[in-house]
Amino acid sequence: MSYIAINTITMDKDELKKKLTPEEYRVTQEKGTERPFHNEYFDHHEKGMYECKVCGTPLFSSETKFDSGTGWPSFDEALPGALLYHEDSTLGMTRTEVMCAKCGAHLGHMFTDGPKETTGKRFCTNSASLSFKKNE
Ligand code: FE
Image (cartoon, rainbow, N blue to C red; front, side, top):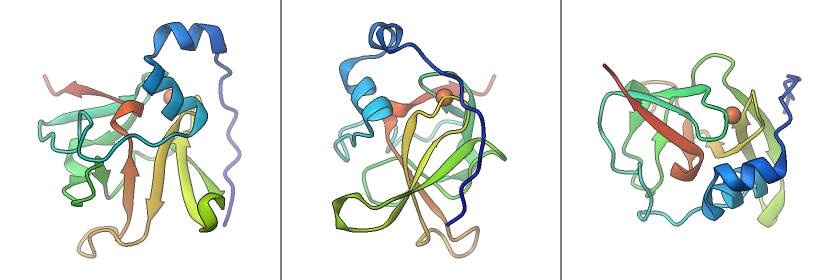
């Protein structure tokens, strides 16, 4: 596993607690996981851009979103340079955690069982980590 060294901006914890809901804080800052099928974007199909909830950086285009059946918003590709990858060995398995490269917000995990006809990757994200901006 290779680590990509990018300087992330440091966000003030108290400011973030004011800006985010408790659920958004738990997921993005404490690497939490929201409930599947009970989140904003898992079944959302509008055209536009999914951005980091914390810092607003564009992360995933709706063009790369697919229905994984997991109950979480899933993408087969991220915007170039948008993510930071980290090997996560919690819960007795090794997974690749993905974070916003700019602010370090936890987004979810990347798996290699995505659509074979495209990238083969599955970025399994939390709606709590994302904001959607519709195409004009
Ligand atoms: Fe961010």
